[in-house]
Image (cartoon, rainbow, N blue to C red):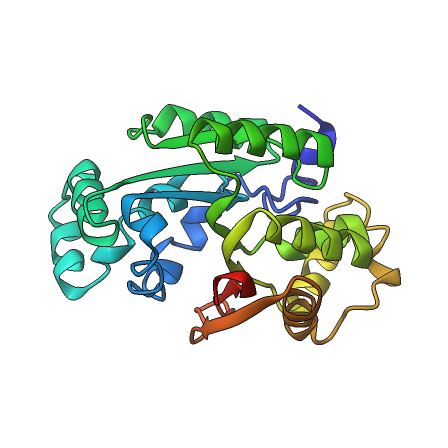
Amino acid sequence: MDNNLNFKGGDPGAVKFGNFINYYSFNLPENRLKLLPDHLWRKSPKTTSHLVALDVGCNSGVNILRLITAQYLSSDFNSRKQKHVDLTQCLYEFLIDRCCGGTCHILGVDIDPVLVERARRSNIHRDNVLYDCVDVTRDQDREELFSQYLWKHGRAKFDIVFCFSVTMWIHLNSGDEGLTKFLTDICRQTDWLVVEPQPWKCYKEAERRLRRSGGGSFPLFPSLTMRGRVESDIESILQQQCQFTKVLETSKTRWNRKLSFYRTNSLS
């Protein structure tokens, strides 16, 4: 395993790529899932029969597995969850409800092979959910994986791409240009984008924590010009350069972040 992927100074939070080994112990999937709408993707003839999605930065997989059951974050689902309802049952009911009896396939990717392996071992939906390790900022590796997956499912691009709290890590490690390129590249490969940008204070905390642990720093941090209003900068890139329209923005999570839902203008 690349030493850059290890946490520093005995602090699991001091990481360079956001690959926390205990991520879902302090940021429960429910914090996001309760904000997901249940109506945005129902009207597309393509997605009602077969929905193909991508989760960038899936970590150990807990989030993506529960994402499939997002429909059930109603009071009814909460009561069922407390009774330990089987996830396969929720998956079946979700597909019937959200996809009108069709199928759903999701590819989860992460830069950390250890987290990906953990996700694979815990995957109980192997016919529908696939995990793979890739650095999404490396064009050739990303394109090869995504194109093969899409070809397997008869698609030219994804219906939905989820980017939950990954933009900061790409920004810190690849700079302004790298973040812009990632957003424009990923938008070419999807009809919908769900993004959860970290605010600027998270950048400062990530830099401070890495330094305190003895792990060095993010070399590009001082040269970033998109700072202070990162969420607005990302929105401008998506709307002006990628030709996507923001359809919905949620209230803030307990981590003071919003989920924003963008749709390509070609679907308008």
